[in-house]
Image 1 (tube, rainbow, N blue to C red):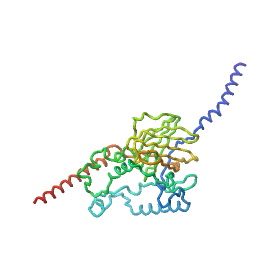
Image 2 (image 1 turned 90 degrees about the horizontal axis):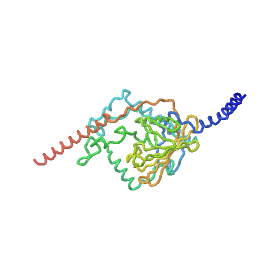
Image 3 (image 1 turned 90 degrees about the vertical axis):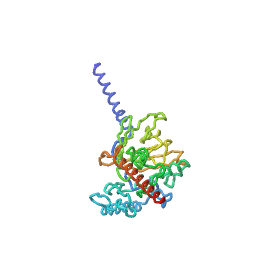
Image 4 (image 1 turned 30 degrees about the horizontal axis):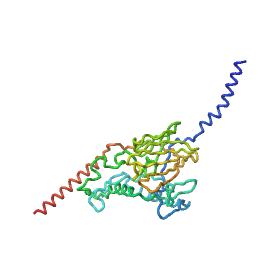
Length: 351
C-alpha cells in the first residue's frame, strides 16, 4: 500500500511538473537559424524623401524592378569568363592602374526593399527623423577627415610623397584589407547589409548566443546575464552581453578598440541591439548607436532579417593575404618611379 501511494504521489508530481518544464522551454523564443539580411533599402535615407519613413507599394516595386533591370544589363555586359578589364592599366585616360573589381555575378545586395510590420522603409535609419546619421562633433569631423583622407583615386602615382603614406606598413591598411573585420560594418555591431556575403547565422544556448557573419567569418559571442569585461580589455567586435526583455533579446556592446568596424566611431562606441522574432521565419533587428565623441546625438535603425535555406561557406580572406602584400609592394614601386622622375628633373635643371 505504501509503495502504491508513493508511486501515485510521484506520478502526480510528474504530471504537475510537465507544464512547468514545457513553460521553461518556451520562456524565450528560439532565434537559431540562418538569415539573409541583404536589402535594397539604404542605411541612410536619400534626401529626396525628407522625413518620409515609408515607401508606397508602388515606390517599393519600382525600386525592385529598377534593380532587376540593372543587374540583368550588367550581367549581359560583363565577361562570363571573368577576365581582366581590357583597358586595365594600359595608360588610357581614366584607366591607369585599374585592375578591375568583382564580376557582377558575385554582387548580392538583395532583390527587395526592407519592410517593417508590412510597410516598406525609405531607409534603415529611422532616428533622427530625416533617416540620416546625426551631425558630427568637432572630434568626429577630424576622425572622418583622417579616415577618408587616406583614400584617393588611383592614378598610378605616389601622391603621398614626400610625407608618410597610407601604404607604409601593414598596420596602416584598413581592417578589411588586413582581413581582420568585414567592411561596411557587416560584422557589427551594428550589423548592416553589404554588396555580398549577407548571411548571418545565430546559434542560441541557455547562456550564450553566437552570431556568425559570412563576411570574413567573424563570430560574435554574446554572454547572457553577465557583466562587461574590465574597461581595459578591448576587442575588435567589442564586448557583448545580453538579456531578455520579454520576447526580445537585448544585446549591449562596449569595450571597442579605437577602430571599430563602424567607420568613424571610436573606443567610446556603445551599441544596443534588439532581436525579436515576428514570425516563424523572420526576425526584427533594431539598434541604437551612441558615441558622444563622434555624433552629437544617438541614432537608431531597424530592418527585417528573413530566414533562408541557403548555406554558409567559409570566406577565403585571411591575415597576410597576397593582395595586401601586393599593395605594399606596388606602393614601393610607385615611390621608386617618383624618385627616379624627381632625380631626372633635378638633373635636367642643373644642365
